[in-house]
Length: 193
Ligand SMILES: Nc1ncnc2c1ncn2[C@@H]1O[C@H](COP(=O)(O)OP(=O)(O)OP(=O)(O)O)[C@@H](O)[C@H]1O
Ligand SMILES: O=C(O)c1ccc[n+]([C@@H]2O[C@H](COP(=O)([O-])O)[C@@H](O)[C@H]2O)c1
Image 1 (tube, protein in one colour):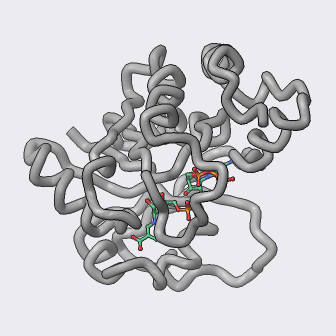
Image 2 (tube, helix red, strand yellow):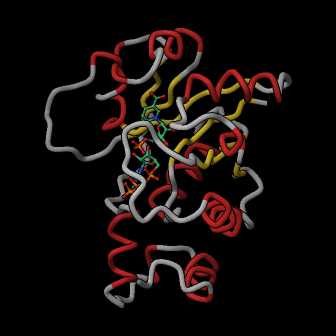
């Protein structure tokens, strides 16, 4: 099976993430997309980060109705910060029967040269890159790499930061989260203070 790995802190997962994953699962040669919940991203502060287990639970609720979308907690037991190159080694060991690819926004591709062992990653894995709006106009040099495939997924400008702030400010942002995710977050009182 060909599996696309979508890495992120997912604090929380939102429709922006789901639309990308759903698009790739239906309109590319990927059989499944797995959301890999990252305990600590190398370039991100740990501020207001909900526990791994809760971020995973929210993502599980989000993918419930989508047989081609799954979650993975493989990084929970790996050293932090979580470098993708290490995770890829572990995931290949655990699932030798699958072929893994990476899913990445154009914005992340621009900073890809700062990732640990990025040359190894791009040499050995296909990258599926979806469009994002960013201030910069320059294209990433990696877009020309034979292992990089551009996909025309829709652009949704929502961030988890915006969702967290809006919940804190008591705004009604239900449309930005799947209904069952909103209900779960609300019942658990996440992000309210
Ligand atoms: N609206 C979106 N559409 C497509 N990709 C997104 C969107 N928001 C985030 N991503 C990408 O999805 C991955 C995981 O997202 P991440 O958990 O970092 O979410 P985020 O919404 O950017 O979070 P935060 O606002 O907390 O920094 C990252 O590679 C990020 O670039
Ligand atoms: O391996 C690295 O050096 C590396 C550096 C930055 C980000 N990543 C991965 O990319 C994911 C999204 O990055 P970010 O910064 O948008 O949260 C993050 O959760 C990590 O899994 C990985």
